[in-house]
Image (cartoon, rainbow, N blue to C red):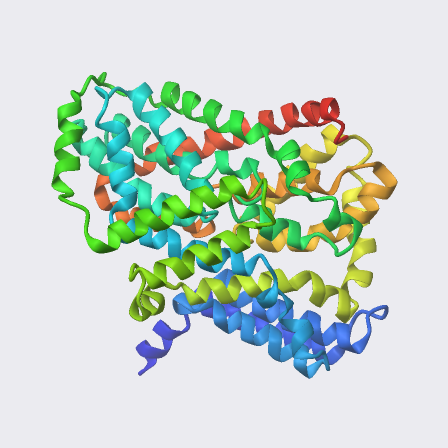
Length: 473
């Protein structure tokens, strides 16, 4: 019995309970004199909810943290509508259809067929493989903004390509192919607003009004365009860092064999192809017609349902509702902070912290990145919590120092992509779960993570001067 209790009281559970007790204590004792009762209760609920998200006791669900935050808000007297604004926002309804479209590309095999169709035309070497990942990732980022869906679809294909190249497990060449596929699935698409979730999510963290209005698709691209160059430089540097032992010159017949193994297209795959053509056509026409990305993705989802690509069981099984609830809750944070008085209370403290480094744009981006890197050891929710809280200071930073709100967002995105440790970057675990021991060598991934931090500093220095040239700073 004592052994069972010891097993139940894991460090994660004990830390979670500690912060829940701290949250309750904040709500009851009201230690901050310049914060109203409603704000104290809401702050206590957020502390308790964040603890369940960060420590995930017993692999717990994200829904638990969302329920704690909503319950705390209701106790504080806030209407449920004010606590759940993110669930009715456009960003969530971009995420949901994109999730199902991406999973259909993967489950029907169409995504794999598209990649192998590209590769089977050429004899393979490292240069052609890496270029292929770049162009395929750009194509798939137009179809779905979910980087997770893209790399879960592409990295198993990368393993198959490495197998076709006869690269040994754990070799530098295999790690290069899989890591480059993974990073290309994430980095280039950051450059446009709906290319990844960073766009709709992190802009939603900006305070409502002028700050959020400044985050237009055109301005986002202007600020984030250096990510296209960064992704290429990172993979080139990774090639020279790993220096694969053997050169590649694989005849295209090897990849053709992989393609032939797919067999003829089935009914669902054909339906997925029809939907894909419809989706890409609508995205092209979006320039000339009053369509938004939400219109196109929702219409594509309806078409998939009508064509039988998706069924009710597919929606139940393939829908990651835990993530959807977490996503909706995070999108609600800005409004919750506003209506509970937390924004008014927190902003002066944030300004004091960030204002001390805002006298120079270059010092600001580098120092803020350093702060975010340290906080990432605790914020395992991929810097979403960091971004949601620090974004509250963007109005003062813009008014007093002329710092565009998306400059701070760019730093948060760089911090979010850090992959030092598995516990702080869920993407690593997800890739390893689908690739098994045929994926990267962990020691090679560790080298890549250090390379990412070093190049991120260079990337931010370059971006600071680039932003000056294009009029952002």
